[in-house]
Amino acid sequence: MTMTVLTKTPVVPENHIPADWRDEAESSHDPAMLAVLHLLGKFVINLFRSRRRLEVENLFLRHQLNIALRRAPHRLWLRGSDRALLVWMAWRWPSLLVMSRIVQPDTILRWHRAGFRAYWRWKSRGQPGRPKIDRELRELIRRMSKENQLWGAPRIHGELLKLGFEIAESTVSKYMIKRQGPPSQSWRTFLRNHADAIAAIDLCVVPTLTFDCLFAFLVLGHGRRRLLWFAVTRHPTAEWLAQQIVEAFPWDTAPSYLIRDNDGAYGQAFTNRVRTMGIRDRPISLRSLWQNPYVERLIGTLRRDCLDHVLIYGERHLRRVLTLYSSYYNETRTHLGLGKDAPLRRAVQRSGTIATTPIPSGLHHSYARIRFAGTTAVVCRGIGREGQPS
Image 1 (tube, rainbow, N blue to C red):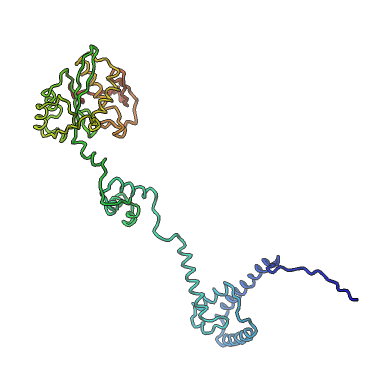
Image 2 (cartoon, rainbow, N blue to C red; image 1 turned 45 degrees about the vertical axis):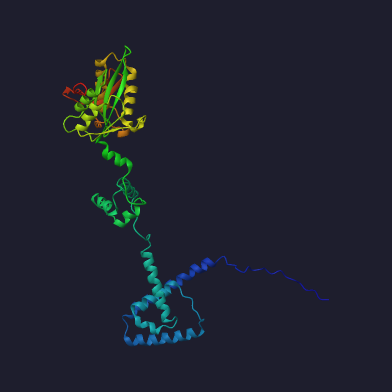
């Protein structure tokens, strides 16, 4: 009876990699580098040898190469340094291609073309396409395109060139705001272009201390929301209103259009005088105060800021209060519709001592900066003749 002894043999995985493979791979590069340096050294030495000696060595080396190629595998494994050296020698001496034995001449040429592509790929490793422009410049192009809807790419490009930006016109077209249909200005721009030629009028009823009613006639310019004229009376008639229009717009300062409501005080004498002055009378629709918004807002502001806090004695007192308030309204008070500016364009003051002036009698205050240069500087706000703000 025979017994078979089974011995357990270790199982080697299919993709097993020895632990010291990195050391062998790294150590294999050193002989290759030494071989290349040795070859270059031999090349330098051969420059000083005789021609016959070089021919004999060349023949002897060729014979050894033929013997080595007989036992070499069908496909040789070459390192990158070997390929680079062969490509360089073939580029330096093209006649050596016919003497190649290890690889075919076409292979060396293919290596050369691959190296050429790799070289220029490395040299052009930056991002392709047009160079990027700054975010600030892109926002400026969009801003110009939005603010000037009648401008095209050539017009915006010309402005950018004058501002010192070197940019192509095609880039301007790329970052412009895209619109559908022909270019057109906005309603805001259209109304602003015609605001200076429009004036609005209205009558404001003011109760007095003795329960009487006074009428304040107000004239407002649409351009800068400026209070152009005011007058006070107990009985507004068409003749009196016509005279106020003449005094409000002397000589050639009359507007092109006049917006008003359908109050019965604007009679035939008023309309005839307006037509004579070359003003186009434009009464609003019945019960449509929103069609005359600027002067209605002026009356509301006048009540909230002044008249609701003052007891009016009579015409003279009301005229004095309106004179003080009109100066404050036109020169000092900031307006949201004007970008926090006054109708008469209040300048920004950044230096000096801040001085306070009560208007009128402490209900509001005006703030301004004054400078001291030897003598004390006094800030004064002039007021024109009665009825006309300065």
